[in-house]
Length: 87
Image 1 (cartoon, rainbow, N blue to C red):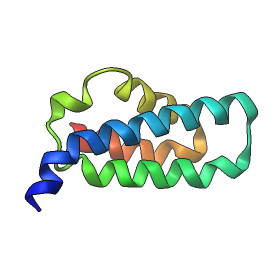
Image 2 (image 1 turned 135 degrees about the horizontal axis):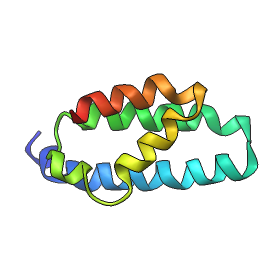
Image 3 (image 1 turned 30 degrees about the vertical axis):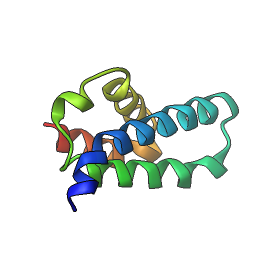
């Protein structure tokens, strides 16, 4: 468990990068096949948010990525759950 706590910030960084890349691809191509991938990434991010320092979440484009997801009806609930975890 201790090693998981030590790497949680790195894991969340990777997850947010993957989310940002997938969002960009989804918005550019409107490929519906990417929707499940985005949902899974959001679910995993939500689970890790309990372990990471909030300041790690507030850096970079993480909050804007979640806010972008709020604009897309199919991802609103998952994105809102992640944002609630941050608050």
